[in-house]
Every structure is written in C-alpha cells, then in structure tokens.
Image (tube, rainbow, N blue to C red; front, top):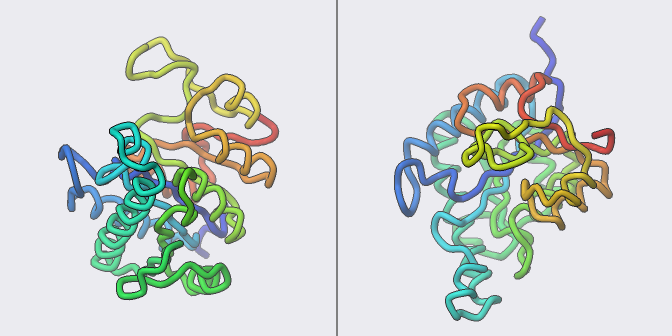
Length: 241
C-alpha cells in the first residue's frame, strides 16, 4: 500500500526571481523544468498543489514606483508579469505530464481562467495543479500576501515558501556563517524580530487563520516532496513556535 502523504493540499509560494536561474532577467527554461519535476513528484505522492508565483524577474511594482512611476500602474504591471511567469510554469508542468490551470485575479481570458475559488478547489480535487496569477488583483499587496490569502481560501493544510536558504535564520546566512537556523518559530516572533521571511501582512493573515508556513530551500532537490511526506525540512512557522 502506498504511503499516505502528510498533507492533502499545499500552497507553494515561488518568487519570480526563482525562475531566473543564472540569468539576469526573464525565465530560465531549465529552472522552470526542474521546478515542474519537483511539483510532479508531490502530485504523484498524492498531495494536491496550488502555486502562487511572483513577477520580480520581469517587473516589480514597488521598484518601478521608486523610479518615479505611479505605484498603482507599477503594481498592475507587476501583476501582468506574474501571469507571464504562471504561463511559463504551466508550460513546463504540462510538458512533464502534469495537468495545470492558470487562474488570474485580473481578467486575461484569452490566456487563462479568471480566479473563482470554487472552480479552483474543483481543479485541485481532480489532481490538477492550479497556478494563481496576478496576486490579489489589487495594488499595494505583495504576492506573499496573495499566497497567504489563496492558501486560506483553498483550505490548504500547509503553505510552503520556497527560498534560497534552508529555512529561517537569526541573521542572513549568506552574510554571516554563524547565523542560527530555527527548526520552529512562532508567527509573532517572526514579526517582532523582523526576520523578513514574508511581508508582515502575509504572516499576520496566516497567524489569524492558523495557517502553518514551512520555509524550504528551492535549490535542494527533493525537499518539496519530503515536506509533503511530513519530513522536518527547513523551518516551520506556527502558533506553537
């Protein structure tokens, strides 16, 4: 009898920068293909997967605003960048044999579906990966907050934030080799210590809705599957801390 996954449904948060690979801008097909294989392993293990992806590899609204552009215009451009990334990831997933749907918080019906919560859940129940694009559909909200919102809306058992390091550290481990990694930590401590794992709105929403967050290393093959099986990978953010 096949081993049962620890989680029925997870929400994976990817940054747009995750798709850069060795590139300075845009999407590295080798990286999207590797991510697709990781997600395929999770699906094959029996866990349903939703994904929220950022757009920072193409446009970042806050950065455009700092350069003088109207912030709302910049954020709308950033939302459209996430749609581009979602379509690229959908292509990689479907080439790996994983049926995938892109659902956008802003209407782009010629290329993807509008986000409708009940329809998204139905896709997930049919073992389709659902990629949620365009953030929340509103300016001033990050894709981290969108990921927290979608995780709650679809009834995920866990939100997984994929980063470049092996969890949450007391300091930036890329700058200080003596930084200490936390196995577990509470929502309030993440906020109070300004650990910058996710923006504050995202952490508060997860705290208020009791949505656990696990921070894992995107660059370590197999970690996503191990999380789905219930292994203690990276750092768990929860009420217990």
